[in-house]
Length: 67
Image (cartoon, rainbow, N blue to C red; front, side, top):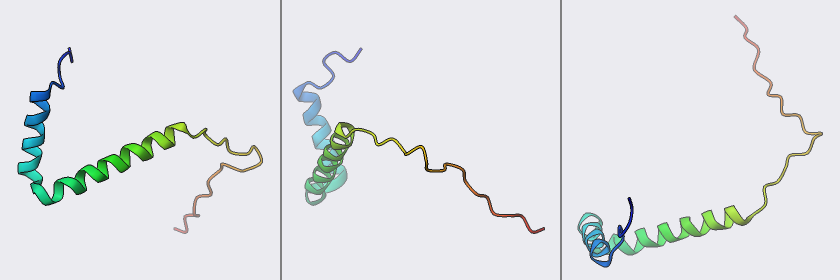
């Protein structure tokens, strides 16, 4: 279904459309933001999840209704 989706010509068209939409000054900032987001996602996936301690209470206290 997705065979040949990201061919060089397709990528050029996508880049050209992004250039028209965001402009030449905003495009590097957009790329930097996307790169930082991907890096943070990869780092977050590498970290082992921290299990909460069994002594910590998970119950939530609800405010009392005074009506």
